[in-house]
Image (tube, rainbow, N blue to C red):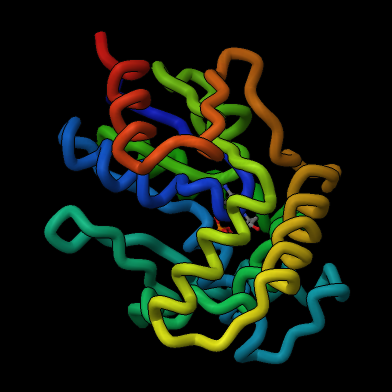
Length: 219
Ligand code: DC
């Protein structure tokens, strides 16, 4: 069986930063599953599909070709063959991804593609349902979290660094709203798998979190 590490947790917990670093150290491929939901969210925005119209969203999901390719071991998300890595990181796309990911059929399609990748490669995969649904047999499962205040501040600093004008209170409100939706949806809600290890990063540096996860996944 391939080597698999599952990392789940709420928005802004640092999953992708940590998973990328651990992937490098352990020679694994990093798979960011949120990027797939984001690419589909982008498709819905472009096609002006109403996210509340489930049938329309499902029809769109059957027709949108969201796939992942790897260039020099780096993930590239393709939407109908187009590299959309540079267009999926906005709050608007993130909110759309969160909204469409509540629909069971959309999840089914995405999960199938993610499991296919894991059948072929040694991966560290992050998302909301990796330890619970996508890779239930993963050898190491981590549930990465931090307080909403800390997560909002990290996001705020990141945006400021890029010169984007933003409001800390609004970012925290968005994070709380997204948590609420991701954790309370009926289909595969975000939750810690029974056999996952909880890592709260609120008071840890990135290097400390990486060291902890390397230690937890050794052996
Ligand atoms: O990790 P992210 O913020 O890029 O994910 C965007 C949204 O996609 C997230 O709010 C919920 C959804 N998602 C999901 O439902 N399941 C996953 N495995 C990954 C993301």
